[in-house]
Length: 478
Image 1 (cartoon, rainbow, N blue to C red):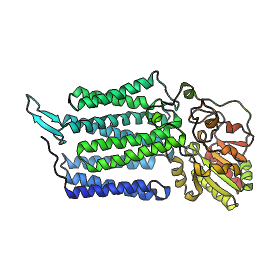
Image 2: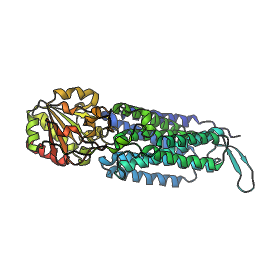
Image 3: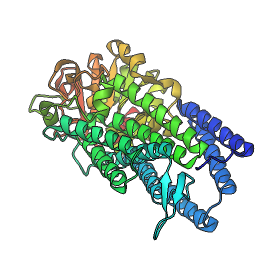
Image 4: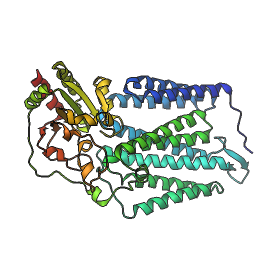
């Protein structure tokens, strides 16, 4: 029978230190002010965990492993320096897919060579290759690891394609999808249970194939409006996959790290669902709340609207007592955050109170707008979340909306057929004047829904590239 080797206290202490640093990293990442320190804690903790594992475990070829680490580090450094902030959500989805694939590959390697991983209960001599019986507990860990990892991989690939524009943002609703999803999930659970008593290869590989399929089936029915929840949900999945494989490998650091990522991602997903008035179960179950009508969306309509210029906007904002700026994905695409901060500084110089209103799901991932504003050195004290600032719009002179559509759309409160119905929005329409920057009147938001705010009497549309328009406003303020 296989018995677990005693854990070296030095190794346990090193992994404990790494775990504490990971917790401090998560704590630091909860605020833009401490995010850099949180990243440092995370990097130090990961360095300790990796070095401890390499030093204390026998490896087949240390030079090969170090070479692989060097190649991965070079790719990561190159990607981090070259990637645009607008592409960060799909980059995150891509990284999640790699974590899921890594879990699948580790599970496959452990299944094919359990002796090398120390999970064999006994080795039975046979003609040809000896048969290694995997311990039942390890089979459970392996089955969960490969299933969650495969779901994370294929689901993240679909999320990447949607975020990158290779697939449309509208839900893709397959006929009988609920029954199909439940049947596949039940099949995976049943096969994992069978795998604990029967080590047949066909069971393991069937679990793997079905998990790849369900990852695809769960994500394609989810529309663009729910993508921030999907990103945080896949983050959670990747953590649980890593934790499951940590048990298989007997690696405490992987268990701690995976559990932290999995639990924090699940909490974030719940917070995002609450912010969007979505059912947490409906989103993780693959768009249970989506309907045929919501999948269709609604295009722009031919209604009267008012157009303004940069000079008009500058004049109005100079006369204002308070301006609330609402950034959205359009700001990210145009990379207008630095010009926007310059505009805010000039308005403050004119004696105008300037605040920034952030919707929890603005952009393509949680905190997308916060990151962009922090990059432009916008003071943290000027940035407010939806629940803290929504009541001020009625007493605000100017709501300056730059590339934010779905999160300001009143259809979320009035149209029950809308795919964003029930989502709390920023009440920009209550301001005395709404200045709305948009590239053209022909397009709609990511959810595919026209915005009634465009056509209201108190709205002035500023049609142009967001960065160019803000730069022109800055010149007009001078």
